Image (cartoon, rainbow over all chains, first blue to last red; front, side):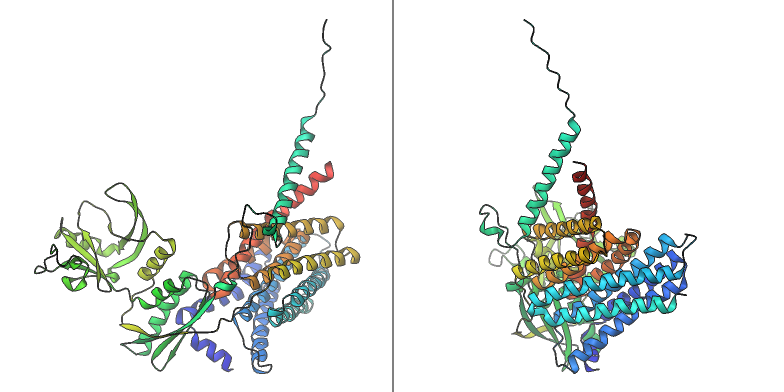
Length: 169
Length: 402
């Protein structure tokens, strides 16, 4: 908990306000746009849950890394939330795009959506594992942040799929 | 004797297409060669070195003590320091309140003196008028016009102006120089004009931290602007930030300045290039063997990704833009992923781009430190990836037709 309290105390009011606005934009505006485009509350719900869980998971991982593994959270670690949200946005964008393209087709149903989500998740998983691993091996100075980014990205991708699978009926 | 007529049945279009394809291929190859490491070993005429920030980083701790040690005053001052340093592009800034003093930790590749200028200057701006009993033409004291003590204060200070805008204006001798234009709040315009009318043709001044820049009042002029002696772009930026980052109410001074260990990781550029190549080849091989992607899409994706990364790196090298090597590797990973997704999910392109634009744009303005920097780079890379996808599609079609 100290890491969060320290971080909060070390920020200026301006930084706190800016970060709060940024979090609100990520958590509310993106799901809001999904709802505006699709008119499907469930898809907006999935988007919000994906982003919120990605954020919470990243925070917990950084705290655990610092407290349990005694790893200093340096500047490089600050890029991890960015990478995780970037990947989450790709998942949400792909889901929204598929729905918008296909929802007017007569044979469209949510099982197709789930199947497509699985394909996308699988392909993104392979891409992430191959790319992050190659860089992790070759750039040892940023090994831990790269590995954490990989783990969190995979967790985000599969959590998104899990949400699609469970919430879409 | 009549010469036989030569009938050339030439179709110009395919020839032009050939030439176009050759030129575009040459441009592709050129960008790839420039992007590759060690190009500078073979090309002596131009510098194709990657301009890395790695060795330019420095880190320092500043301890600032203030006259007013109330929490609000300290927090207000921290906000102003943060605004100034972030505005200047300082990579990492942390401010703390410790024992009623402010500690500022700075890690940056920016000019040390300019960063110190942003921290050490209170930049208290006041409009002043000449004291009647001071001889400003005294040849024994040629600097009399510069000293704030030789002037009387007026009711006008920085808070009466909504903003100070620095721009180039034509001087009386026809040349251009930088001026700080003081823009008034609409409610104060009439009052300020009346104030200036009293001093028409007389020299008054703008006092900044005790040093005065004279200003000869001309009521026919529509603007209130004082000259700035520097032409250096970074210095002008610092001046603009000092004018516009907020008003510091309390007096303060820097008590100490201590060097800190720089903790920014560096990555070998050759390793990054090798990483990109291996990752791309392995990814494409996997997708080809597993048949999860059609060969056409795979080819387009490979070409677009190679182009995106090589054009971006070539751009950085040609324009000598300073880069953080550790961020380059993360940007390369994200660039490959985003390009692949844009190729595969044609139906999702609009939504992915819109969401990314929103998130990256917000992060640039609201994020801090390296997060803001990587968001800026990724916005450029995503736009470049989109452009390269169009070019790759067009190029593959043209080559197929030959």
